[in-house]
Image 1 (cartoon, one colour):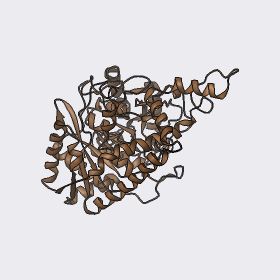
Image 2: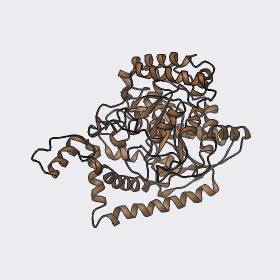
Image 3: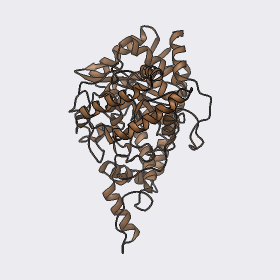
Image 4: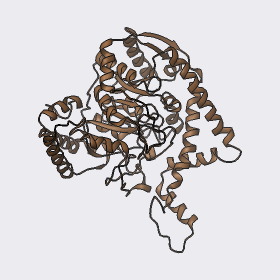
Length: 488
């Protein structure tokens, strides 16, 4: 078996039959990492192979002595570096947390470990998830495995690049305004932003708390559903976690797939019009595939263009509040306190610890919330958010899903969007809506333009992940774009 390209669901069948194969699998995976990581730079922290091997050997003994199977037994998972991992450095790609080692696991990490998953490392990201290219990282830029001169997207670019380069089997990312779906589209993988509250945020280092959501990333729909099964569910440690009965997403996806329902799908006109021609044309081709079986109709969402402004106002306001804790006393860089007042220490810690993009968003957040301006900007953005949610609820009463290009552009050259921040912010136009309204959305690979990946976004009503997975499986089988690994 080709351990590097094999989908997780096939690996699990092999490992449950012969647990000792996990050692060979991980050995081959680390050989792959040694070959390509220097080019791709997906990981900030990679666990030493011997540490992983010791953990695996213990896990194999437990598996052999127990009749209970584990849902992710032996599977190598890459984790975005803003999710807390006990004893394993977690930096948020920022100098201010460069040496931070969490004393606890995030709930999603505890769930992965309890099901036999192997955390192999922490992946690069935009600093504190603020960016769309994984270039605002304080350490280095991650490169797109399909074209090393281009960005893999962001902010979960390290997780996406690790999958596309064959350095992990599945991964976790976080999505505040498209940070799972953006890099998924740019690297030809599958990425799902779940309904807000479906997956616990306990242990996720916050950027914008009302928008952040942890989600699964994989090279096929089956693996995405299996990973979601493990990480979803109510968590009393997270006040925003939703306590409702959940399906087995993998089984429910296949139950739906075999029933072959004909869905009503809305084509969001404006979200296509905002896209560059190569992306638009490729996206319409995949829509034609959907519409050959499902009922499709074009709809207009003229107010969608205001979503980017509302998103950045809300996210920057929340970021300024969340990042206030990094003061050098409780968190952050340790500097000399002798004969210095608190203001001097605070200023030095944050000047040295934060990068330009983070400083800019904190400053804008403070301005947005300042006296005389919060009602002009923040309150207005919250009202727009409420209106947006009500309008999309109306759409979802008539349609099962809304489709659009995931990203309006092809993967940009490294440095291209950093040099043009307005273009970078506006590239989120199709993805931020799902975060503002809290709905689930998935990015599905649909093809390549001049060797560069394009993704289609499918947005569905709250807690209807099964429909998103079904559409993803439908397109995956029709287009035959699955388990793709770049020849780095």
